[in-house]
Amino acid sequence: MAATAGRVVLVGAGHASAQLCASLVTGPWTGDLILIGDEPDLPYHRPPLSKSRLRCATADGEPTDLSIRPATFYSEHGVRHLAGVTVTAIDRDARRLTLSGEPRGLDYDTLVLATGSLHLRPPLPGIDHERVHTLRTAAEAAAVRRGLSGARSVAVIGAGFIGLEASASLRQAGLEVTVLERGERPLARVTSPVVSEFFTGLHRGHGVDLRFGAAVTAIHDRPDGVRVELADSAPLDVDLVVLGAGGVANDALARAAGLAVCDSPSGGVLVDAWQRTDDPHVLAIGDCCNGANELYGGRRLRLESVQNANEQAKVAAATIAGLPRPAAVMPWFWSDQYDVKLQIAGLSDGYDCCVLRGRPEAGTAFSVWYFRDGRLLAVDAVDDPRAYALAGKLISRRLSPDPAMVADTAVAPRDLLRSAEEDAA
Image (tube, rainbow, N blue to C red; front, side):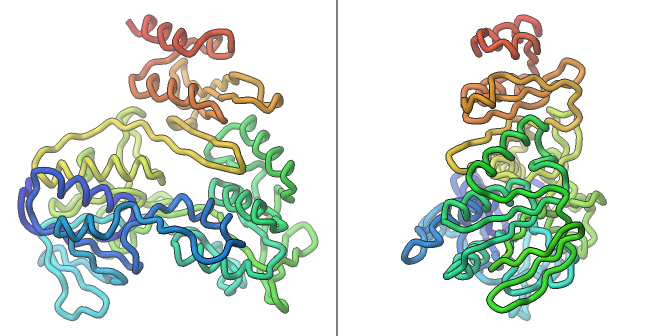
């Protein structure tokens, strides 16, 4: 689908969209580019929504602008931005979009879906209460800040990345925070028990009431707050609730248009190595799509990360410009909680060997290395950028150090890399 000209319409205004715009307008492509977003803003940084955007809750005025690129970038490069516009349907035969408030529709030569993901709202009585919030958009983060005016207590439902980051930020803002996690440990879907234990201690050490096996059954209104009903314990009265219960692909538009979509619970528009869907005129990038990762044996993945969104956008831009270049990208993630940074290189699920490097109980940097059949899958690095950097080199090159050497902190990172290179040779 080489297209050095023509009209590209981009649906969604997140990180993937910002990178696709930059890659197209600074490359050989010379066509017409239209960016459609259902929010009033140009693409902006979303990770701060559960971090610094909440910590400023008690500060005067609104936080600083989070735009990824200034408005002048888009205007100077001829990118047309349709703000606050919703795409309600895709007519693939006519290559035309139906837009909210626009009877004529919008034609495209190439359509790129970058609709992102949705934060889950569990199907609970009272879940739509005005004091129950998600943190997917800047407007939602602003609503939380407004709700914190005069508030003292917050319940956070879910102990994944969003839940723990929000908990840390709200605690630093001076709130009483209770985390309700129905599972038995935090970050259970992305890391090992040793890392979960560290973050449990971190949050409890900062005064967070972190509860496991806490199944929420309903949320009820009460004067100036809400009551959270729990399956196996007394109800919890708080001023507001923040949801961190996970996410799913925002792929309803693609489904309605008949595009192939993953049938797993988290969904995602199916794409190939060039970010193409099963329609030759439609691509998908970022959190909304599901593609094969060659570093992990062609396994299909839907990843929610800035890095993944940016890399897929670059691949899609090359495809649109007629210079296709599929990439074997190593997934990576990060999370800031209090003054601690967790960096994750690779994907650890399916590991059969877990190696600890360092001593988390000592309060110093440490890392956890995950292997399967002797192959390095992933590394979780806690305040350990050297381990994270080394993991990136190893995993992207499909190199695996000796687990016994990893466990020995007397072995320098450069020696781990050298040993893995020698073994591979």
